Every structure is written in C-alpha cells, then in structure tokens.
Amino acid sequence: MDIKSYIESGILESYVLGLCNEKERSEVELLCAKHAELKAELDHIQESINNYATMHGKTPKPIVKQQIFDEIDKLEQKTDAKTIPLPVQNYRIAIAATITLFALSFVANIIIYSKYKLASEQLLTLNEEKRQLAENVNTTRLKMESLYNDKAVIADPMVQKIMMKGVAKSPESLTMAYWNKVSKEVFIEIKNLPTPEAGKQYQLWAIVDGKPVDAGMITLTAGDSSLHKMKPFEAPQAFAITLEKQGGSANPTLTEMYVMGAVGL
View (cartoon, one colour):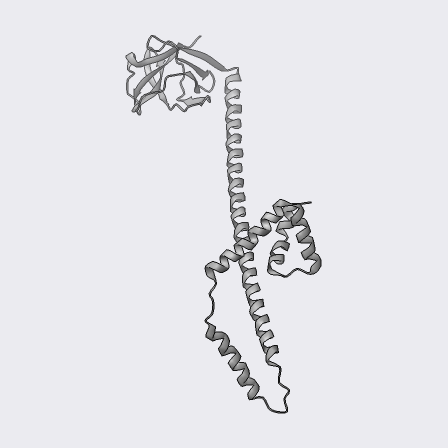
C-alpha cells in the first residue's frame, strides 16, 4: 500500500471532521490499526485541530444562547394562527446543525491552508534544489571546457614546453611554461609554489634580449591546476617567477626569485 498517497488523499482529515461515510470510516480505522504511520498521522491531525481550537477558539457568553432561544419563542408567538409553526425543537436542531457545519467548514479551511502552506514550502525547497543542481552542472561544464582547452594548448605541436625549476630560494618549487611559436601566446601551469603571504603576489618575467620584461601577475587558487594565460612574447629567452608586492613591480626582486627556465632553440 502507498501510505504517502493515502495520506495526501485527504481521507484522514475527512475522518477527523466526521465527513466520511460508514465504509470510509471502517477503512480508515482498519488501516490505522495495521499501519503505525497512518495512525501517527491521524493522531497528528486530531492534535493539530485540537491545538488550533484551543488557541483560537472563543466560547460565547451563556446569555447568547438564551437570547437566541428567546427570539425563537417570540417568533412563534407572532406567527398567525393559520400558519402551522415549526416546533421549537426543530429550530434548535437547525441552529445546532448550522453551527456544526460552520465549525467543520472553519476547521476544514485550516487544514486546507496548512496543506497549501506545506506544499508551498516544498515547492520552494524543490526550486532551490533545482537551482543548485543547475549551478553545479554549469560549474562542471565550465571546468570540462577549461580542461579541454588546456589540453588543446599543451598538445599543439607549435607549443614549446619550458620547465621552470625551483632555485635556491625554493628548490621544491616547479612551474611549467608553454610558449606558442606561431601565435606567441604564453601560458603557465603552477605545479608547486608556496602560498604567498598577505600583500604579496607572484609575477612572471620573460627574459628578452637579456633583460627581464613583465609578463603578468599570477593569482594562486587552492586546487587550481588550470593554465594561466600571460602576456605574449615574440622571442623570449627564458621565464622566471618572483614574489613581489600586490599588483607587481617594475623590476624583479632577484632575492625573491622562486623558479626559472630557459627556452630551448
């Protein structure tokens, strides 16, 4: 049996409100005896209605009831003798039935509103999960595109690979440079560089005609293994990376050099 569908059908609310026929009542009672989850839901609905009635219900003053029946007596006394008056008991039954129907309608509206509110919250949650999933899919797509483009750069036969090994400042450091002989584009791949201290940033230099030329700043991101596109160069002789102040320097700080590699002929 699909317990969730049975609960969502509203039959339990109808049972609590006394709107079920005899067959439906018997079915609800039989199923609740077999399934603890149904019994728990039924108890929850009854408790919710009772709690709401306790919180929001207002007991009319005793005089109101007497005033209603006094009005009924006056109505009968004014009735023409040729008119067959309804018994007072019938009026009382009609009033009681009206009050009961009003109460049932009030409680039913509460239940409907509660279910609407729950459905709205579930829809909001579903939309948020859908948005997050779309974000994740888009992030993954961008990463795959970046990886594909990086592989294409490295695999290009016109690209020369330059291994930039760590110098005395940091022997374990390692970075790869990729220079395209045709397009003159330069990319670097960070293999191992220490995380710079606050206010510091790595700067790439190209050695051209024996002089260092700024090739761009490097922003390190934890776990980032993608290629960084730097400034293009016509005929670099070597590449080096130094640690400079945030934003870079006009000339390299040689005592802060971390890696260097020569471009082969």
